[in-house]
Length: 222
Length: 222
Image 1 (spheres, chains in turn cyan, brown):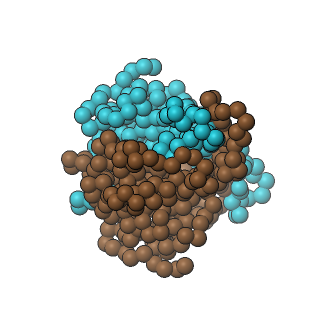
Image 2 (cartoon, chains in turn green, red):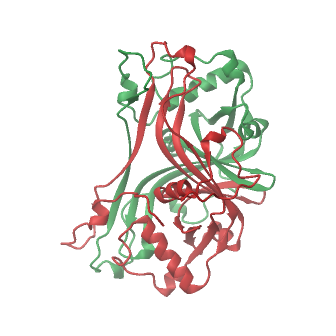
Image 3 (cartoon, chains in turn cyan, yellow):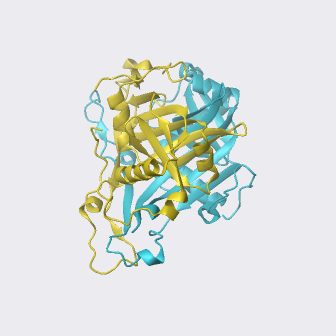
């Protein structure tokens, strides 16, 4: 579980290396807890950053969207991308303005996107996306039909050139500031889920399933 | 309050235009509620996406970081950037795999970064950054000294070419799926704060201030 991801010149954490990690377990934990990734790419010379749902499947990240989306067509055609997932854990209040900070965990995955085009692989990838977004939901809704499958594009990016960056712990004040009469510490940031809100047109007598009532982002061992 | 942001070919929302908004009030609300932005830029031909704290100050976004950071030097030197802020509101569970979605609000700001170099403007920008991150904190910690000011770079990006994108409401199932025996609805995603955790080396007798105990991201009118 201490397997290390390869370091490349562009993914190496240059500043504050103590905040950097190439540990695959750390990287996977962040990617499995997150729900939204920010996907960056270059189009006609300009940078773009778009939020997308995603899923980690072993050593790849899966992205999907409509076949009608310019973005998805670009990702499916294959493009250099940066996929970043960030979890905010706390605001860090220091005795000095200067040392205010945030505790966070983030992962940047750099690489080239590739389409998952073959029909069975595509269907499996969509199943993984649903299973990771809402564990337990797969098998408890109508599966994707052929028309819907054609209306969807799936792309993957390998988790090879990847870096985790984190800050944890209390404020890092200068020694000479410790005696100042200011409060210092953390304001934790928590993400919670629920309670489920039924659709207005839900059939009578269908209770929210346990996976919706107890929704959470538990780390996996995958 | 219904002032509209200019639309440009690259910021226009092409697909699902009903999800797009150029309303400045909507854009400001998202930017004021968010804490972390994902900043995209191109370096040596490759896209990068980095999470950063930020603040909206009128019609500009402020970013800051260490003078020793390659990223901040790049942003201060002036570069094309995409700054994206995303708020996740709910997971959308539909009767079909296909219509699963997320409710979210996001803003993409495209433009060229410019350094805030003049000392007084830079100090004011840092004051705004602190005041927006932790309203009430300004005046209740040690101000930035000249050495710290030199160790910091501040960059701004104009909120001119900007788009909000949102999804709200219940799942959008196909009519023929409404009779299926599956639960459908929303699993709300909530961000909560606190309770404050004092630093281990906090002086005795300093209670957490109200702005830390009651921390929240209230919309502003600014």
